[in-house]
Amino acid sequence: GENVEQHPSTLSVQEGDSAVIKCTYSDSASNYFPWYKQELGKRPQLIIDIRSNVGEKKDQRIAVTLNKTAKHFSLHITETQPEDSAVYFCAASKNAGGTSYGKLTFGQGTILTVHP
Amino acid sequence: DGGITQSPKYLFRKEGQNVTLSCEQNLNHDAMYWYRQDPGQGLRLIYYSQIVNDFQKGDIAEGYSVSREKKESFPLTVTSAQKNPTAFYLCASSTGPTNNEQFFGPGTRLTVL
Image (cartoon, rainbow over all chains, first blue to last red; front, top):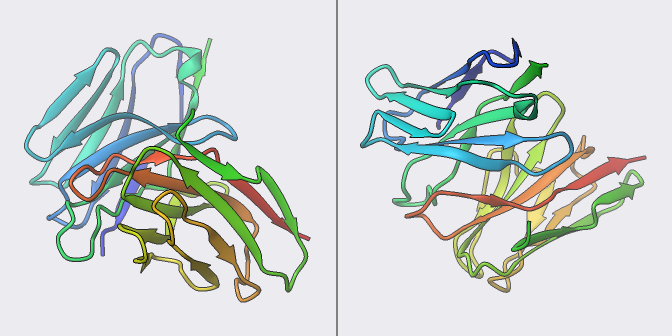
């Protein structure tokens, strides 16, 4: 099955700096890569996702890049703010065919702390 | 935050007891999922269901059971066979296999006393 590795496990930056979180995946058939943000004690919420037919996607201060050849994808947050502090999870899945049903495999998470 | 709900928010159980966690969605989503989250770890898939009366084991199904009698509901039972059930349980739903975005419920924190 799919295996997703996420690094670093913790990341501390100063407000205004950029933050980068990286993930690698093992199943070359995976074609959907979402990123979730989870604040303490709350539900994960989707912040951005990318599909395998594009290499980069941006949404204001957040961007995701995908390298299918190397099987890795990254989350980039620019001009970080204290409210960006949270746990970030990457995930990977492939469109259902057979019994995969769009299963998401998650990375272990990155605790991002933005210091004012 | 509406659309997918879980209850209760906190649950305490004695060892040897079965307990059922509720998950309801009014998003008309076909697929529903149960995840377990332990401190410092990612989300691990317990069970998932694409349609009513059908469900599949995830990566850590041992000691858990589910049912999908209605499209809106996907309850999870944590049985006494689950060796280490204390965790945060998250339910999610999505429109189906062609759209993988999953929406999460607020979670249930289960503690075994």
